[in-house]
Image (cartoon, rainbow, N blue to C red; front, side, top):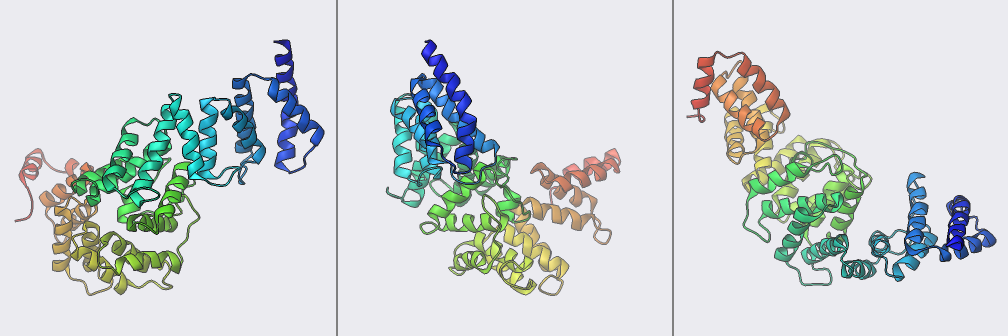
Length: 409
């Protein structure tokens, strides 16, 4: 017992120096040998904690390189003796390429060993990888149904914030597109919208509507981009989401070059993927990868998406026609497209209609409140603010009349 305690104290003394040696690649063979000898005499759980402590030192140091191989060596020693926690760490290192070459087969091997010992975290990491591999047909038969079932299991049962966020986002897309399940766009949009968080800020605004641009370097963001990139050559949605991440700087450095725009362009040119058409329109609207802003081309691609029934494309065509962006102002055409979009419960079109009917030239308070209310129910913040002002200024009898109003005649 005393020998183990002395070994632990010796490891604790040497560890800060070991960190410096590894951090600046200045090995000292004598001190390294002392550390290894003392490490071997510690109990298995103490060995794991020491390896973790060394890894956390690099995390706190904001070390932007893969972990030194020594850290993986220490974890591997513990993992090979059967400690599930160390097997999980090793699985994650192989999955992410930290301190070792990225190897999904090795990651699955170590996660499986942890799962065999009853680790639910290990089992769900396996489910997560199998979901993506099934979705893109990586080493297994492609199956939307299997992928969705796996993502739903993680979304429902995982306590891992990162895996849960990514899986829930993909569940939303599967419902939105009707892949592996009956199509339900509203359910899909709601899932994507409500899944947005500080640690995974990719909701309806940022992903479907393309309204907000943000930079996110959280682990979940980086993992999501990595998995989309892995599947980009196999599935159009992965290619599309990879390009969305590049535009947004979501899990990767922002890239608004011609190469990123070309991904949307190639998908849009097939005439099948309205989501890519909306984003291509955004590229022309903002000058991403196209040089100068071109409102005419922006409207062209929004219209293509709108004609395929995409509610975001319909909303944007309505906005363009209403304000004369890319074409002459045409309020009649604008209202037609905005109503089509609003009929699909698009909160942005509902907000735009609320603004139109609240304008002093087209004043219709009942319709303004109706559409602002619909948008506010979906979380549109400006609609909530304007609605509060409108309802405050109305007499009780007028409020009653507004609640009976169901839409334009």
